[in-house]
Image (tube, rainbow, N blue to C red):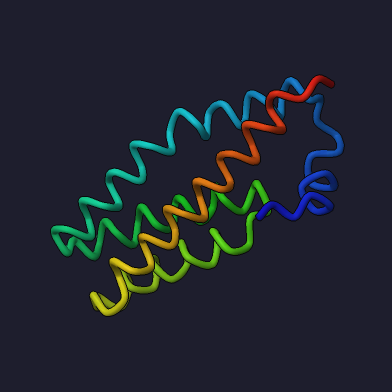
Length: 113
């Protein structure tokens, strides 16, 4: 899931403690944002879907998780185009991809410096 070469290059000047704090902030914000996206999908609130998917895409880019980024980008596009075609399926795939990302980040987080 995570492109570790790019991840390490991106965070090479950061102390592990700082990277851990960035990951912790993501862990705190992520569940609420996913709930918002799910609500946006259920209510077909395309404007907020666009906004929330865009936010998530940007955050995921920090962790170099290309498949999750691509799925967030697709949801962002669905919100921009105001079409529900493939919306639920894309969200389900995003949930799976981000769960994998969370597991990888937790494993990284648990490693000693």
